[in-house]
Image (cartoon, rainbow, N blue to C red):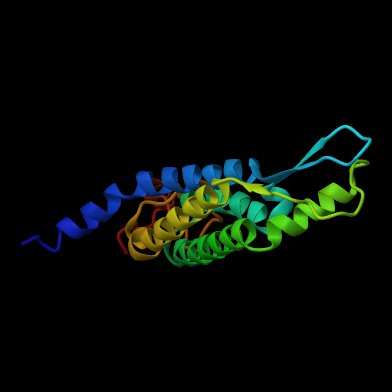
Length: 195
């Protein structure tokens, strides 16, 4: 049986791994979105064959933007405290789920084929016929995995983030506390500083 005092300590241990995990998860999703998701070979009669490839950023550009936001959210976890950190955690959960859905739909649905048709139309070897055999890669699932990990880490931020330490308040705006009078100055003026 764990004591109530052990729970905040365990939660604090998750602070650095959560921030680093968000950086890695967003980076993995970003790298996976930059890899080839689908390709085909155009071989028209009388012309040399041409390979047409599309990356995840061509297929799901919104997912690429979400990967960048996940990386910046890791920095926002460092910079925020309390309720602000909770909001960042909720946003990361939503971004992770959205990015995973976009990655899977783009990689397995008609998104890759539509992007290939658009890329093939730019090629001089495209004569309007069917693309033929389309080769797909596992990179959409790697990107989706990065987003799922980001969503799970966002849930950790929501659960434990309020107990994590924040950045120093050194550069915060000054508060409106009354200025404490210097007791030596009061004595020099003949007043009692203890009153």
